[in-house]
Length: 430
Image (cartoon, rainbow, N blue to C red; front, side, top):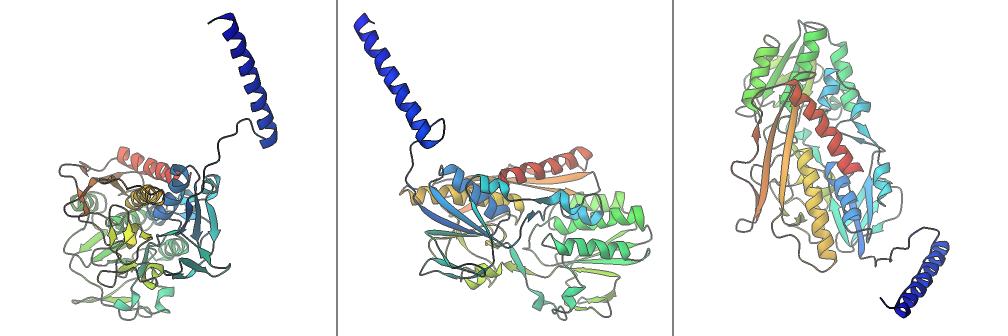
């Protein structure tokens, strides 16, 4: 470099440094990133595994160019996965509860409110506490609601004492209290509806957790499982081995036993075969897409589930609205699980960013699922799978040979299960 050129370079560099310093003073920061043009607003209904994940990743992957409002009724996130450990007594509600502060750190505007309606044509969400909010695109992730009317006698009054506790929260605590006050030698009845329902292995894990508690505190008590399905829906051999090896004489599993009626006063359930009396009745009703999805006209199948385009999670009923998680009409071999809802949130977030920027979404998304179940306070089992989009069938299909189940229960698997919870809560909530 010549002397002349070097002097010019030094002079230009000094001028640039002075300009940078001036900018820093004006902006009140050490760096002045170029402002990016906003591309629109997405409203997310529901702050669970699907909605929280989508909210975070919309902000993160769009580098803040998409405005995100997340509407959630609860002040905190309470995890349904792992909540059975609270019933068993090895975990407390605080262990499965997390706040939404991390999402606010990403710029998500978390609003505690209740949705009163969705105006599809005007693209507005009605709210109970504040004025309606407009949106460019909408994500609906309301989980499931329950078809109590499908079981005779399961009316509003009966629901006060016959709990399902299939949404973690106050009912989880109340059911645990019922188990604690039950007499030693009593019978806990768990009824399981026909699939599909939220969390295929969840009821069988619950049977293990209650049995574990009884084994420690009420050894003369029994767990009676009335399953409307032909057999254990998920991880059957592993659960049956646990019942045999750990809870022999405690767990009584009966398949093809669909509960048709309940009597909250007599504390009985009625199947096609018997009327059975118990001390604690834990009745899981048939399930369907959450009320918000149903009232918005997003349900497309069997008056229960929402069909979606699996490339984008966009509703088949209404363009511009995306449905995540348990409310969807599941693709083949796809469970209604927390992990899967988290994956739905990422597909939707990535697709929405591309669409709102005038680009095409990823033509072949690949997602994973893992479901851990605890068969005692420390031992766990799991099932895992990989799902890839098939353009010919326009759905996500399980990849042959991927995933699988545990070879057996172990404390190592239990450790992995608890670590899964910590990691996925951090992933979705920041």
